[in-house]
Image (cartoon, rainbow, N blue to C red; front, side, top):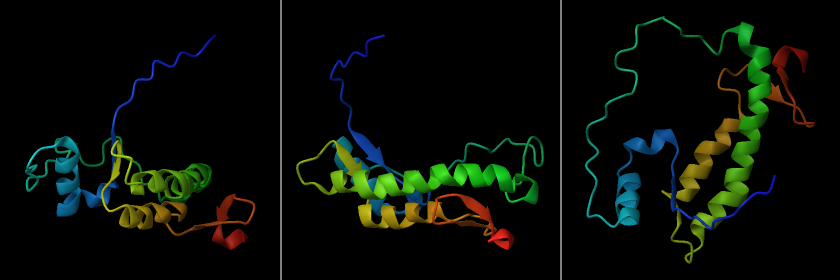
Length: 135
């Protein structure tokens, strides 16, 4: 099977979810789209009709520690790749096709992806995540 490259390019606007409340994000997006402004005072979540407790899990439940230890490796790798390779592209003046609103703040936010949100797992030097009590 041969991969075909049709040289299809699209601009990329990347943000971290917590940046949605920041005016600078919306101004950078408006600039990229070449519009004056984007109204953003109204936030409508995608889960407004969710039934509480139905089909929900608590990822911080000890039952999910082993699963979380596996996905934390991906979170760590994504954090490193974004900050080490992708953010520098967005900082290049010549790259108008790659925009990250406030790239330094973005990088600070995604660096935290390397830490267990439940604060029970730690990353070893070999890259694996284990429960703190087994350290």
